[in-house]
Structures are given as C-alpha cells and as structure tokens.
Length: 147
Image (cartoon, rainbow, N blue to C red; front, side, top):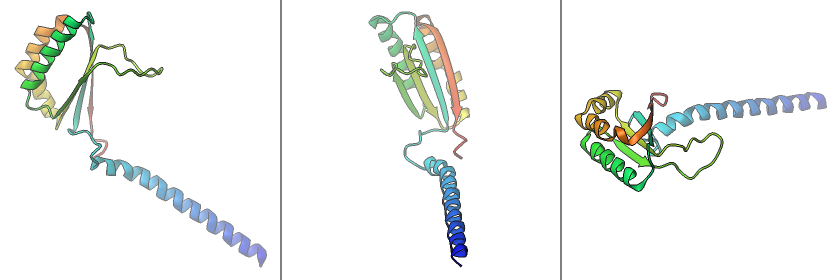
C-alpha cells in the first residue's frame, strides 16, 4: 500500500511538472503575440536601418551630413518614426560601433518604404551627401514574425 501511494505521488508530481512545463512553453510562444499588442513594439511593420561611415569625423562634416539628413527626413511623409544617432558608448565583442551615424526609420509597409526609396528628397540627399561618407550599410526588416 505504501509503495502504491509513493508511486501515485511520484506520477502526480511528474504530471504536475510536465503540465507546468507545457504551460511555460505555451506562455513563451504567446509572449510574442502579447508583445505585438504591447506599447514596447516599434511603430511600423517595416524597419529600415542605415549605417554611415563618414569620410571625416570633423564637426564640419558631421554638421553638413546631419543638415542634409534632417532636411531629407522632414520631406518624407511615409516615415512613421525616426532615430538618428552616433554609436553608443558600449563595448563588447559582438558590437560594431565603428560607424559614424545610424539612421533607423520605420514604415507601415514595404510599399511605403519603396516610396521613400524613390522620393525626390532621398535622391537629392544621396546626391548632396554621398561625398561625405566612405561606406553605407543597410539592413531592412519586416515585422511579420509577430503577426
């Protein structure tokens, strides 16, 4: 009888742990769905990240670059949100902070991003400012994982 009760307790404990584990995994999956409606989510379903390495990091070049960039950004209504900044003062092996400035813009869709790419002010920005950088790296991301 004792052995039987011990067996039932063990099976019950194992069953409870499995149930909790399964619930935990389900909640991990649902965490992303919850985040999709969370205010922490970036606005816009298409993220365009551009990294610029300026030919010269002098105050004059930086000022001219930022003036051209700001003027261009102000002209494009399709941009949902924007962030412009130099590298953060963070130092780990996985961080590349060799660039001069990053530009992160969000759009509601790839279609709006495509309008931005063909916008006259974008073309003018490239024409006016391309002599100020030696390298540009772009990363685009769509946020359909959360949908």
